[in-house]
Image (cartoon, rainbow, N blue to C red):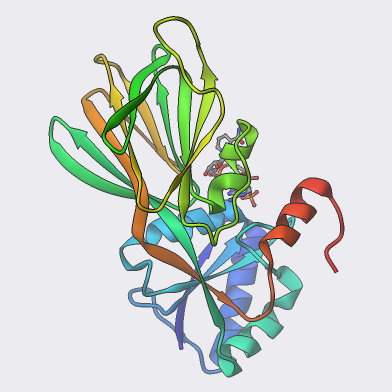
Length: 265
Ligand code: NAP
């Protein structure tokens, strides 16, 4: 089996990456930067987002494994002192492959159409003023938004930015996207539902900016600014991210431990 390591860049993560390479060589695993089968992320959930975007072109051909250097992560289930066990598992056992939905975002701009993917969420905000946008669901007007921004999250991202703006936590086996508002202004002209909306896999939403405005677009941790956006289509991508599991790592245990502080046995 061949693999690549993406680390957070801090001293501990770099040392763990070196240790992983040593253990991997001893156990017959091959380092391969170009066409790995396994991507090992060492750091936190943010590091796994980075690993996802580095390998986004081959995302359904690789399986991700997260090693965390701090608190238990939503994507990172192995701890720093478990590297030996992880490498032995990788060398000797077949993992269970778990597939989670990702978001597809198609931008229509003055220079053409581009497609982007997000593991956690796509976020849209105004740069100079509040964001003004029409939101259509399945090609029909749904609402006129004015406010700080819109977060369109995957189930995996429902515990991230989405949760901070009052969105629901969604199990990643539910193929869906959640649209959540950030500080919407409601009056006679601009009126929004006020609660987040969950779209099933076969639905899509279009965000159409209604005046020339500079917009900040974020795909997970990656930000760009543009002033030529005509419309943005968000849907559940046709392919998924794969995680390699060598032991159980249940979603509700992660939610309980991260937000309620109860020990997971
Ligand atoms: P960051 O600002 O350095 O970290 C954001 C925090 O979100 C970190 O504690 C990270 O965990 C955690 N996180 C990432 N994915 C998560 C998930 N799926 N569920 C629960 N927590 C998660 O930014 P970053 O490391 O570059 O990550 C970008 C992410 O930050 C975005 O995708 C967005 O979800 C999140 N964000 C949140 C807010 C907010 O809640 N107000 C605002 C902006 C962005 P680790 O410490 O393990 O990396």
